[in-house]
Length: 75
Image: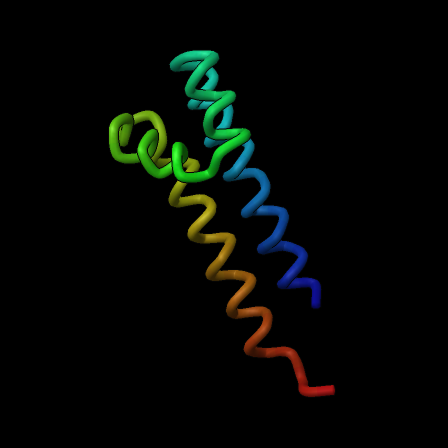
């Protein structure tokens, strides 16, 4: 269970980093990514250099959550 919470924390930190990258670029990109999720994918594609590190951090978080759910005993 601790591994799942750790993965969730990593995922949230990556999401906050992604929003920071979007807001650094423009207030409109930041608000768009915050309100409407498909704009985040467009931002990721257009501004890969700024958004790749938070994106990979989110992927690591998802991987840790998945690994934590696989090692949990069935209830």
